Length: 280
Ligand SMILES: [Zn+2]
Image 1 (cartoon, protein in one colour):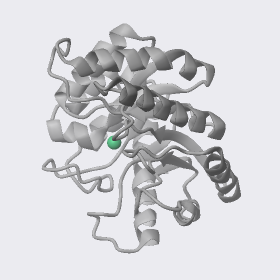
Image 2 (tube, helix red, strand yellow):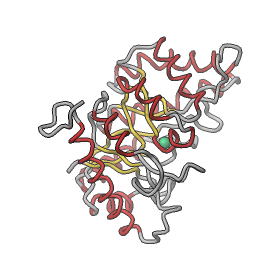
Image 3 (cartoon, rainbow, N blue to C red):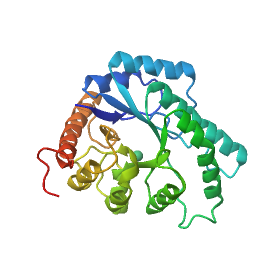
Image 4 (cartoon, rainbow, N blue to C red):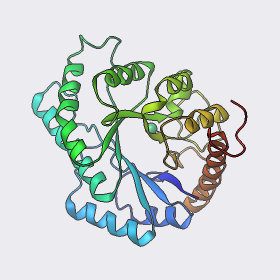
């Protein structure tokens, strides 16, 4: 069973080794790298090499990376030096993905009004996305823009019109989609460029990052959409322990593995080529 979970299920800074070991011991085959997802942290070659050593030792594979739009290194900053530093920070995550065998990095975008053309950050975003295209291509890494608000989805649709599907696609975060209430309709429109998934649950009131099947996400419909999307990688959960009510890492990971197994099964039977697929 190929299954992935986020590396920051317990914490998102500091030495990741104990958490990688626990993830592997729980039976997961893959990880979504989420450490330092919102910091200016630059991974040095010593750190990337060490992560590679741990992944090999624990028998884990890197699925994709939650890259960082940083705080003072910010790819949409109006201050040009901050934007350039932000582009370097994204390049750093492309380097890391490429060195560790991942095919995509995830990025957030600002909450632009629609249309965003009057917003100076929109022009800065386009400059940065332009600047990264050949670098990403040379490293066989694609950029997946994550959905947040409805406006962020409008931004993703606008970017789809400007950039190739070999370069730019979507990370669907079903917790965010559940908060707006329109996520699954949006995914239905955008699913042919789905590169990355952030699967977790909430009760519709806050971004709780709980385990699948504990909240109000419409999992049967989501499983059907995933099965009929461009996404072919393992089920990848962005759930964490913080509001789970589970204090023990291993107990949490066991529950996560069971939820991921159940969800994988739902996606498998919903695939158009599944032996026992229900009639369309
Ligand atoms: Zn997410």
